[in-house]
Image 1 (cartoon, one colour):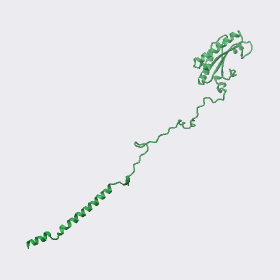
Image 2 (cartoon, rainbow, N blue to C red; image 1 turned 90 degrees about the horizontal axis):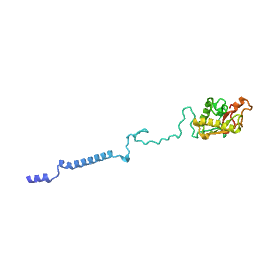
Image 3 (spheres, rainbow, N blue to C red; image 1 turned 60 degrees about the vertical axis):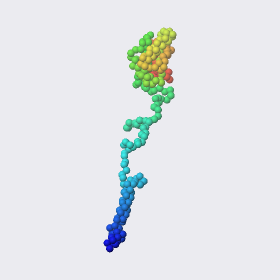
Image 4 (cartoon, one colour; image 1 turned 45 degrees about the vertical axis):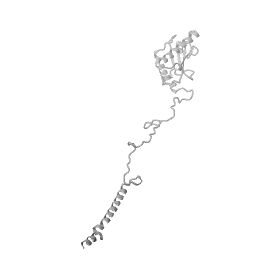
Amino acid sequence: MTDLTTHSVVGGPASPAVSRAPRTLHRAAWIGALCLAALAGCSSTPGGEQSGVPVESRPIGEPGVAKKPVVVDALPKAPVGQPPISGAPIATDQRPSGQLPGVLQDPKSLLSRRSVYFEYDSNVVRDEFRPMIQAHARFLLDNPKLRITIQGNTDERGSREYNLALGQRRADAVRQVMSVLGVAERQMEPVSIGEERPRATGSTEAAFAENRRADILYDGEDKPPVGK
């Protein structure tokens, strides 16, 4: 009897505690699998985008942002209140062809005076005419395209040959003063007229004094302005 009872306990149907163990293990494995799947879904980022993450924005000019090339105007800006600066070449001479600047004819300008007067039988430039010569020298320096002819004149006394030589010395004397002031030789041409072109007629001392001179003529002029 004892042996039969022991056999029935060991080889008989399993007890409730023993039968529940496989079910508990299976349920725990299933729950663990679900947890792993949930964690894997949370850590993935589909398509490389992150929903809800703010996009960083940087103002232009901060480091790390490519700058657009700056276009600089070829011409400077005109000051406020002044006309715009033109791209056209600056006109250095707006006079019609063959017409001299008006300042050379203006009686109020020192440049309208063109005659240097000399003492009898002399080619020495007197101090009173140096300011006028300096004004013409300055004008020629500022206008290097202009040229002048310096005409030396004499009164009627003396031989024709002597007066031509004296007229040349007077013209050269004026040219030399301008040359010292910086005027280029190519802008000046000294010539002698001698007694051939008197400004005053007659054999008086006043007429002689009027004819002892050197005239400054610009290209295109045949004689100095009326105001000498």
